[in-house]
Image (tube, rainbow, N blue to C red):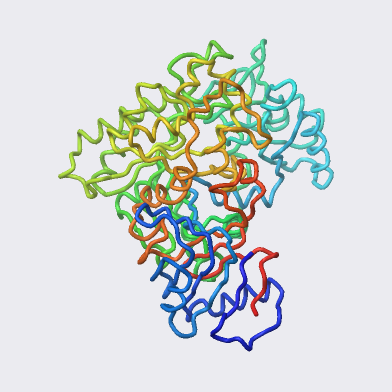
Length: 574
């Protein structure tokens, strides 16, 4: 564990303080005093200097990387000094795809994550209802049926059996479907005569009566009735989500879709000193806010440089678990369905060409092989329509978010088109319990194909998709290198050849997200001149047996040379 002291510079100083006092003292000194990190086990993600044991930070940037004695000699007078005692130091990790307000809302609301059965869901629902008023909306999220027995979606009758005196809406963990009880359906006017909206599906039983499950765009039939969160509730969720992310070791989070209202909320939180996490933002589109961004252009230095606003987040299909992902062939476990297109390509194309001319990065949610092919075709068409000489940014670095199921023929196209694959390794170890049934063995060859994409020269930026997944970088790193559940399970046909090396995994969460955010000159590796963002771990995750990756913990998260988080077991200042 690190030891924070002044080494030989102040040998008389002694005593111990609690972790809270230590962290406060470090933050108070951060603005003025340089920093030396010494006696560490550094993995720099810089191929020219892959290992080191010390770094010097001045004015929030790295001025030296190398040996501890050299760092001490180069340290300016009065520098703070942290003796890491061999702790592992990584470039500040970045989550390339997450939903910040959703992370906070999950922590603050009715969270059904980890529910092991329908009976357990019903028990939790009854307990939650006991504290509410009849007739008021009861909402929750996080359930997933893939490990239940039987592994089937819940129904309105299942919810009615637990709570019938008020409307209930429970969103599936993937955020692409929900189940509503009978009272909620009645309030929304959903019955056997309700048509499926474009890009959505109302699931029905054998008699044509809605089951309570609403997929993708059909969710809005009920959600439009829910009271929106207040500004104060949103601010609280953002603050809680940012704090949790920093505690988990993230130094940056790339928001996969929000609004300008939320952007301004974030600016106010930064100004008040309530969040330290760096953010990179994409605005949901098509929307009025997306049109505003196209008019105003990208803003890489919003909120004093902590928040970059330069992307638009689009959707082409839904999620695999709720059978909304658009497939080239029918689902293996639902022969009548090939999934959904939540937006039509012709609607998106004008936005794509406008984005190229304005220098706006496009990020598109594409999960199924049909959805991914449609978007690769559409990107290629836009690139041809707006050649490099007519673009605000010659290298647009457009992204496909998730890229989960790919036809083998489409895998090389990412590198050929210069499209970034923004992927979340934990999806592979969550989905392994139901993806074989959805896809069949043949399509699994192109599923979660990180290694194949890297082999073609594509950039693969790693993220978590929290709150869909837990949002822990150690889980994501483990998933990328082990391709097994956290309990160690993997089917024999789960394509272990798609695992990546630990060096590749590190770059998926450091170098690649920096490139995907146009920030490779400032972030992504531990190099002189770059921002002093570090993730300090208790365990050398680059060498320990795979299961021990999951038992490691974050010792410190350092952002811009300031200790944004220190674990309770970190030694105090002397």
